[in-house]
Image (cartoon, rainbow over all chains, first blue to last red; front, side, top):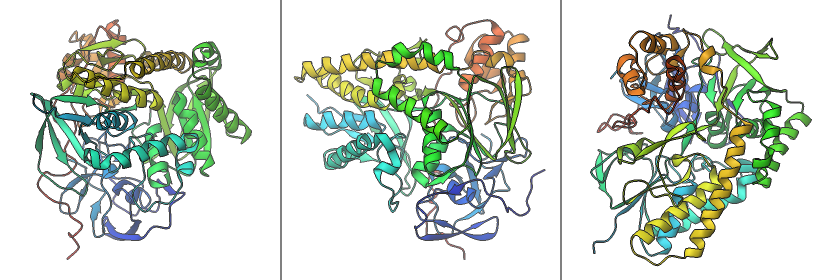
Length: 106
Length: 465
């Protein structure tokens, strides 16, 4: 069952380079902040423990290769735009969803 | 004679060194790269505004990384550089490109007379129970998180697999302050010992590997060799990992796992460019044919770096130079033949070392036999090992493209980059054939999905109303 509740837990931990400017964005309707230069993947996984739900079995996914090869980290904005989280830089005002599947099936 | 139109794909060690040689000969190559900044994966540069020094980012390799970045910066005005640009097709001697990231654009074409492919590699992936869970990444991914984003993938991390990257990453993570719960090596100590002769061909590299190993032991990091039957458990994300050693099962709580079993070349563009392939026993992969200088079977198409067979970053720099020299020679220019021969000898020596690495860190031989039917092999389409085996046992499939047509394995968004090594192992094992006999997945455009919806800008100006 796709969980849509709170995300108290995160996957990634910041260990360096924490002196960058804050960037505000929206994640599942929550107002949160990332740091300038974060990828969308970093921005989301330092706030949550998934990027999207699998369109096939409804289980959470959180990326895999981080170099734009595996295509596991496609997620969606509130207005339905798909984006590859590992190779897209976070921008202020982005409105991202994790409770939906990442990309339409070809 | 028309001016040659030279395109280099990939701005890692091979691509940058190739561009350097061509620019020095008075030519102006186009350098296309998917990343924001030059350096490839190994010498990947964090985005602007990050402050760690090269020493902190690249450790022992910092002087090489610095040198490559400096070379690139000097080259900038002498080449046409297209960062954040995906090459998604190659046909009729032209490349189809798409700018992405902050530079939105529509697809456009770039004709070439000469093409140097420096497309690099990704981790070789072998699935295990739980590998789809959030918190499981490739070794390369874990490294990119640290290098390019200043993050680690969890707060209690297990590294598992085989190959030099396993120990390098463990060292880098531990040194950066990450908590490494264990390093689980599927290769054995005795195998590494048997490989010593070949590994001594690059004594400095071997010494670094031994240093990482010793450093980890000295700092109390748990290192287990000869590991089998890896399984990750958890519901919504990683909770624990279990494995067997000498027949005894052990379990460890953790919240993240990075795994990898060596590297695989990214060969899709070489395929679309029409290059002939051959099976490489050393790499256990079908690779584009090339001569020592990097010439492919197609006139005017060259291969350099890990994209044409894994040899590492140092070899990639030499191979990039060598391919550029071959290109100049093919253009009828006078080249420094002594330099060419020097590079040839150095590259051959490095092949010896590479043989040693394969002996020291072999991919687990029993993997395909032991992989359970319910295990998902393809993470794009969620196709199980059982489905692949049924295609072999019931439909008599003996070839990779046939397996793809029947099961959709390799047809998903990643085009088999992640699953094809494992799927090939399953097919070969079930069919009683060798990896060479079952063939290889053919590349298809677009070799990657467009990273954003084409023509629809995801601009920073799109604010909440």
